[in-house]
View (cartoon, rainbow, N blue to C red):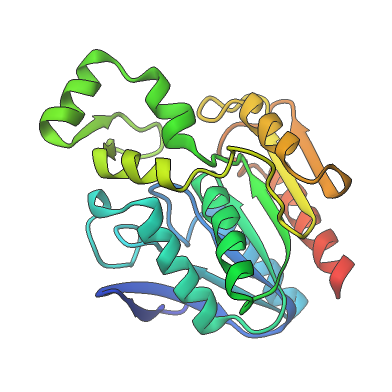
Length: 255
């Protein structure tokens, strides 16, 4: 049974956190849009970290999982600030960030902010089906006239989800804030090794997006693993094995 979360107040929102101490580099999980920290990939990583005696940290963004707040009130800036508050409060020593889908965008922005402040040392990134800049790169270009109307008149539009009975909500605030957090506008210097895992059967984030991201990263320390039959979730046993190998290899490089 998974232990109850700790709650951290971040700008008035109670953010649910689960943290286990252990050796460094610690592993920090950053979930995707409308996902939660009890999902298959996060739990698999948690179990692996426990077996390895390695520190592991995960949380739910506001409006997600066990955290407080309304999902529709979230933006990249808000979820980034929460993620930074969590890592600064709970993480000690070197850290590897593991970001899934939108979590990869949060991870890349965290590296930028943490390097500016110099208070947490990120020594590796593992990015699964990465979706940095998804609002401007993947959502805005394909908006229908009806969706643009809904954004203008109602401040949001809804899309059916393949992963939940509830629709995805995309707000005008999310899209406008996304433009302010873009990372794929030029070279991205992470100052650490990066391993990208991307399914070629991903119906949500095309593999071309991962290829563009890889091209912007320092080419001497980027690994791009393309999974021919992998979908967006990358939650099959073979995908999870690949995730654990990627994280374990990065951790082994800096142990």
